[in-house]
Image (cartoon, rainbow, N blue to C red; front, side, top):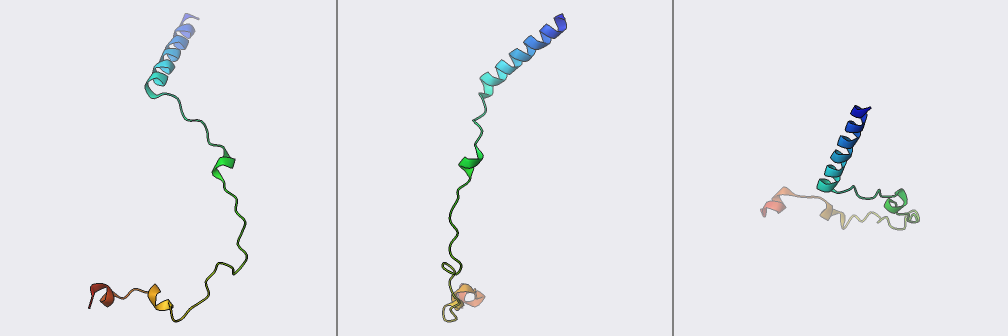
Length: 68
């Protein structure tokens, strides 16, 4: 019985020392605080159509990058 009391007091002292050194953990973040709901955009509303005149600027050319 005395060993159990000694273990409990040692555990309490260790817990108090740990809290004094590190503090306590931050509060748990709730799921609804991490999620943001947005309406979906109508299909095709924000998607740019293909533009062959402007498509050249999406590719890289090593000669142009080197200034040759």
